[in-house]
Image 1 (cartoon, rainbow, N blue to C red):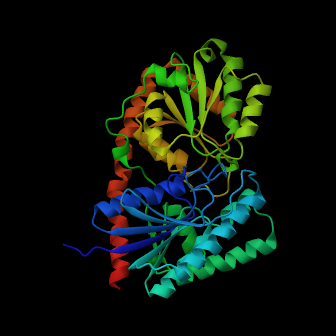
Image 2 (cartoon, rainbow, N blue to C red; image 1 turned 180 degrees about the vertical axis):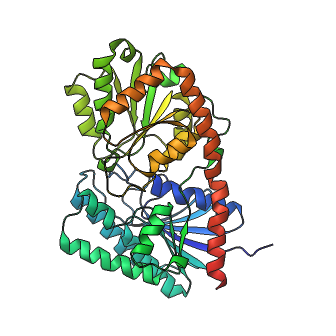
Image 3 (tube, rainbow, N blue to C red; image 1 turned 60 degrees about the horizontal axis):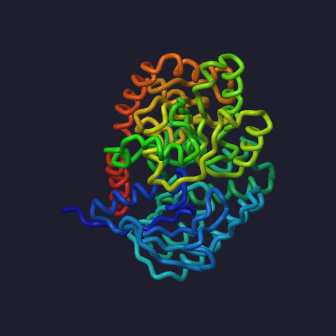
Amino acid sequence: MAACLDILVVSQFFSPEMGAPAARFHDFGKLLVERGHRVTVLTGFPNSPSGRIPDGYRGRVAQREMIDGITVLRGWIYASPKLSKFTKAAGFASFAASASLQALLRRVRADVVIATSPPPTVGVPGMLLARRLGVPLLFDVRDIWPEAIAASGRLQSGTLIRVLERLERAIYAASAAVTVVTEGKRERLIEKGVAPEKVFVIPNGVDLRRFEQQQPLPAEAWRALGLDPARVTLMYAGIMNPPQGLDVLLDATAKLRAAAPDLASRFQLAMVGAGSLREHLTQRTRSEGLSDLVRFVPEQPRDAIPPLLRTADAIAVTLRPRKDSHTVPSKLYEAMASGRPVLVSADGAPAEILREAKAGLATPASDSDALAASIRALLEDPERGRALGAQGRAYAAAFDRGRLVERFEAVLRDLVAR
């Protein structure tokens, strides 16, 4: 029997927070524990995406807890419900400082250290831990920063971009291996000078066990969320921040009502989650008279998401236009795992994956006319939607994290054996 590994993960985000950063290593950590390894996560107190630390965690400087067999070590982090570029930057910097202090003072052991980005500032405590413990560092990259945020316009300071680029190069140089979520990101890192033999693709995926035996919610539960069980429901469930480009959903809903009022009368858009744009979206809904078609549901615990997706009639996955076209939201795989048809409004890899899976209808990012036409197509032909959903469920099986963890484990064992 292969020896178990002590695996130490540095992640600014972790369960019970929502979103891809928290989900990726909650799932991988749980699966690695099941395979006999010991997993410790060094993280902050939960606050994303609302900026509010829950009552059970508020007012603490440090905390230790167990989640699904994972030892979770939490440290202080700056959090504010006033979501802005400044407060987000302060959150990144505070976690890097707090986790670096913990890296120097906490009594931990590890055979390998993983730092998962973004933000890339997690690489600082990651490098400190790897050096202090004399073990290899693996840098896990879901989005290439600062390149991605500079291209999107979210970061415009030339000085800060140069500082982050120097940090990025230092982390890649210090890492024994780098994992990315798409082949396109692997090619980009190689272009940036990272040695090809150091870069491995471990895609985003879904823990299919979370969707097994899940039945749609009863009508009473749907009504309790403010949703009409008699209407065809297109659901978006996730973080409501600028990169998601969620205005296109409101635009498409308005255009559907203008073009086909009879169809729109039996349709509803369910927006589930929280984030910096939620208030903007709710104000738009009220001011444009869309409240009869668009319903907002509060952020839900992660375990509540699979039955919500199973109860919806279709799932929306959106990204605003971006130069980095090889980003794949993890919610795409969850949407396909639900067995519901998926409407993608995004360019590049997400649309290509959806077409390959034959799991839904893809339209260009921010093209509300095309998205409205896709919604109309599913309303007019529900049997087509059911067929697309079944094909998506079959496709998602190849991206089950129960399979992907084997590849990840092989990379970790190879690093430790060197």
